[in-house]
Length: 476
Image (tube, rainbow, N blue to C red; front, top):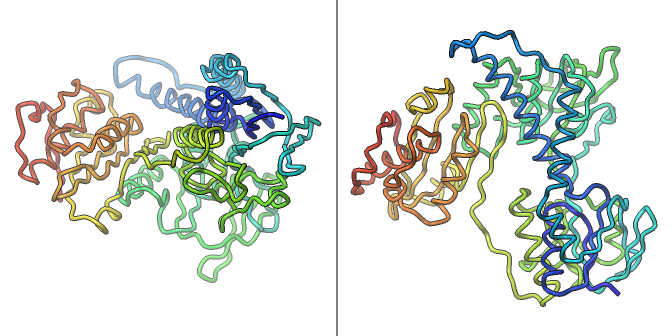
């Protein structure tokens, strides 16, 4: 009998397999499809590749500003998709995790199809693989939420958008979380007429309010039609040129047509077909697998990690959960899952990113100061002609420690990584301000915004805090 059977070969599953094998357990990793899971094959890797293409188009249109004469860029979408497949395959082939899987002696069943529990110690896959195990770790991830709406089968998901053979003339995007706004932004750059629908009062509702407002303004300026508080969808119907969405807003019936409709209204646990109820694995109220602080399910020898637990659904957190679940599955429950600083970003145009508390959440529990530096006050953004955006820092007035950082604009995701390290190190604002970050860089804006916050708090600054960048224009 196998010691550990892991279902799912995304980041959580792969790390769980490596950890359990490293601890000496006989380990089997079962992948329904490709090695790497959604992250490598349908998530961050292909999305970032498409976003890079969108960035190249934008940069090509800037060339005249720098004395470089060229014709208008033309997108060959089929060649772009070939590049996406090449990147995905290259990442998979050269993944250090894949090499480690082979080196550690993990038995890998790839393309096995959906696995289901036959009993508490046996699983069987659609391809007929049947394995008995002492302990299990479920890492089958999540999937796009389906809505109980007539005609919903006429809509697509982000996966369908990435798999298109040609760029559609028009697209409806329903849902403005990270997935929805990335679909909208990328295809807008490719020339698709985008209408973005959000049921709530603002797009990207989990972001800081100022970031949400700025992204909405930028999207509208780029030609995206943004519908906030749009109402309730009644149905979708097929039309000769695509699909129609019928919706009710404040008692009035409305409809809108497009070549394609993409629905991105959330992520649910991928538990279909696992037969969890038959073996006693309980789900929480949201439908995710219920786990304790050790990532153990309601069945003592079955653990779960990654998106299927419904926690922070990002690759770094999935890796952490895979490590914790495997450690406890092999050695006994003694390693609790700890909360860590989690930077979050999205590759839209403009990019946006956050780490720590939003201003609203920080004010609910702290006495705070905020400092904001607009991007047009930063030397590097002026050089690159990317002056739209800002960097906001939130600090606790009593401790002077950084509570949150929110950025919208070019390289926002990269800037926020530096802020994340400062928060993880529990740095005070003056300590961040006094790090002599290279000039001129995008990350250098952090020194300026931190110095602004430090001055508000009457903290002593040395020469390093007096940057050559323009000082901030807003602070509260």
